[in-house]
Structure formats: C-alpha cells, structure tokens
Image 1 (tube, rainbow, N blue to C red):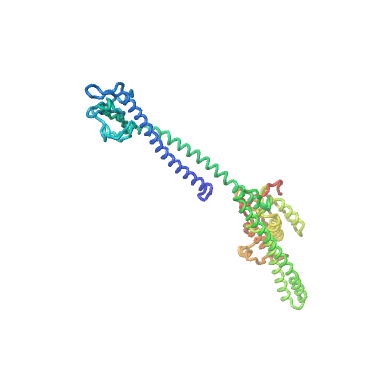
Image 2: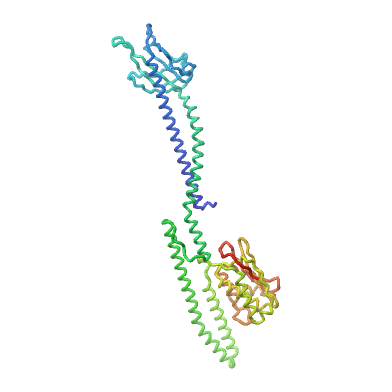
Amino acid sequence: MRLKSLRLRLGLAAAALIALALVLAGIGLALIFDAVLEARTVDDLDRTAKQIAGQVDLAPDGNPVVAREPTDPRYAAPYGGLYWQVEAGTKLLRSRSLWDKRLGGPVDTAASDDGSVLDLPGPDGASLIAVQRSVALGSREGERRLRIVVAEDRRDFAGSRATFLRLLIPSLAALFLILTAAMALFVHRALEPFRALQAALRAVHAGERARLPLHFPDEVQPLVADLNRLLDAQERALVRARASAADMAHGLKTPLAVLDALGRRIGGREPEMAAEIAEQARAMGGQVERALARARTVPPGDLRRRSCLVAPAIERLVVTMRRLPEGDSLVWEVSLPADLSYPSEEGELMEVAGNLLDNAHKWAHRRVRVGGHAGRDDASLLIEDDGPGMSEAAIAGLGRGVRWDENRPGTGFGLAIARDIADATGVELNFGRSTLGGLRAELTWTQSRMSGPKPASTGS
C-alpha cells in the first residue's frame, strides 16, 4: 500500500490516536487503582484501629493492654509490613512486627474518634501509611487518653500494582488490536463510496455507461455532479469540434474541385502549371482528410473511452480489400487472438487498420500478414507485406505528414492519417522492415488503459 493512500493515512492516524487514548487510559487506571488501593488500605487500617480501641485497657501499673490482638499473621512477624502501637503517655504497647522499633512521627492531639491518615517512617527504612485514633479511658476526673496507630508498609502496594499492571497491559494491547481492526474496517466501509465511484468511472471510461449514477452519499454527490457536468461539457465540445471539421471540409471541397477543374482546363496549354495545381489540390485534400480523421477520434483524455474487438473489424476490412483491384490475387494471412481489444471505438480502429491494410494492398507483391498479441499488460496489432518497404528517411517523414507513395493512386496520406488517429487515441504506431521483406506496421497499447468487451468469436 502506497504512502499516499488515504486508507493507509487514516488507518495510521486512527491507530496512533487509539494508542494514545489507551496509554492515557492505562495511566488513568493505574492512578485510580492506586487511589482505590490506598483508600481500601486506610479503611482496613481504620477498622483494625477501632478493633484495638475496643479491646484496649490499662493495667494497674498504667501500662496499656489489649485483650485480643489483631489476628493477621503479619502483625506477629518481625517487620511483617503491618504494625500497630498503643501509647499511654510514656507507656507503650506495640505489635511483635515492630520488634524493638516504635512508630514515630508527630502526635495529632486534635484527633478524635475519626481516624486521621499519616505518613510515617517505619522499620527497615520503610515508608508507612498509618491511621491514628485517640481513645479516652477512665472517669472524667481520672481520664487518660491513649493514642492508637495502625500502619502498613507502602512497599506492599508495589506487589498489588505489579499484578494489576501485568493484567492491564496485555488487556490494553488486546483492546488496541481489536479497536485498530474495527477502525480499519470502519475506514474500509467509509471509503466504499469512492471505490463505487472508481468502478462507475471505469464503466464510463469503457463506454458501458454515459453518466455516473446519482445514488452516492451526500458528501460525494457534489463531486459526482461535477464529473457529470464535465462529461456533458466534453461531449458538447467534441460535437462542436467534429461539426467544425465537417464544415471546414465541406467548405473546402468546392475550391478544391475548382482548382482541379482549372488544372485540367489549362493542361493542354501549360502542362507544368496544371501538374503543379493538381499536386497542390491533392495535398490540400490530404490535409483535409487528416483533419477530419483527427476530428472523428476520441482524445485520450476523454473519460468515456470505448474499446472494441479487433478480429471482427479486421475480418470485414480484409473482405473489403479482396474486392479491390488485384486484392483477390494476394494471400491474406490473418491470425489474431480472440480476446484482443482495441482501446477506442470500432470506427477509429477501422480508420487506422483500413489505411494500413490499404497501403499493404497497394505495395504487396503476393502476401499480406496480419497478427496480434493480447498480453496481460500490453497488446499489439501487426500488419506486414512483402513489398519494397520504406526507407528510414521515408518512415521519419510520415510524422510530418508528407506524401510518399506518389507512384500509386490516392492521396498518399494514408499512413500519416493512421499515425494521427493512433496518436490521438493513445496508441503507438511504429514502422519498420518486415520479415516478409516489405513494410511492418505495429500498433501497440497498454491493456490497463481499457476494460473492453469480452469476445465471442475469433478472427481468421
């Protein structure tokens, strides 16, 4: 897929945005997880502090005692990660997990039964999250306040966070793949109108329809309407051009006939002048024929390109050539692929191939051979004869439209007209020496330019 592909660019942009959104979502979920984990930890610590507050009492010597300690085994393991401590003035009661350490930090004298959250330094260089509660024991006269602190090592959070991330990252990666595939499908579906438009344009290009259909979405419909207007304008311009060429040819016929008549009239008195007038009249007639031939062709830029099968048209032309003087005495060898299609209207093919076959008929001694090639990417039509052929200088002169076959009847512009029409339809026409000894005329074109009809019969 090319970098200029709209689908590729939309897909990459969508994938980048999905990845960015999932990364931000992952960061947000991690922060939410930390907040929820901390809130739950605080809630558990506060519940333990309340439990200890309900069990704490003072011994006769003034030391605090707890009737029933928390059951979590981490409170009993040295530096187990969970700690509790009860302070009664200078007297101290603590969990076994603190060993010989104590929970320091500021004393919140304003704390009430509602627990306050503290960050405290812990044993073994740990950072603790703690909940503090204050409990009053005894009567009003002999009331003593006890400070209860329950804490947990924040390093225990790391394991929970790592487990969460081990689950979160693959889940986000799988979600990325699913969303990217869904977006690719969405982009594919969103570009469906453009593929339909491309198919409709190919149908117009192949001559299967005259205009684009009007059932496209509202976003594409203005483009379709503009293309249809372009087709209308092009058709009107082509009609005007052909009409102008026809008017020009009709307007020149009378002056040319007059010149020809004058040449014959003065032929007895001024034979050289009469020959010159006749030659110029033929040259003008040839130029008119070339102009008309070019006007009849559909230019390569025309959206509505046609195509036609070559074999049936060549069959009809060969039948016509055999009816011409000396045509039946020639051997016509025709071997064409059944699926060979010419990238233009049949009339243009008849014009080009007719001029080439007429030239071969005039100059061939005994044989005219017609062949072709229909490849996957390119195609060709080959016409050869066993006549005298043409020199390289004469072949080069064809591009300038000079008359070269003055020893044969006709205007002598047939090959030049064939080249003009071929060039106008985007087909390349080359001349050279045939293996039969005479002229070799080869028409070549690209198959991808056209989508012609499928053949039903072959030529022979």
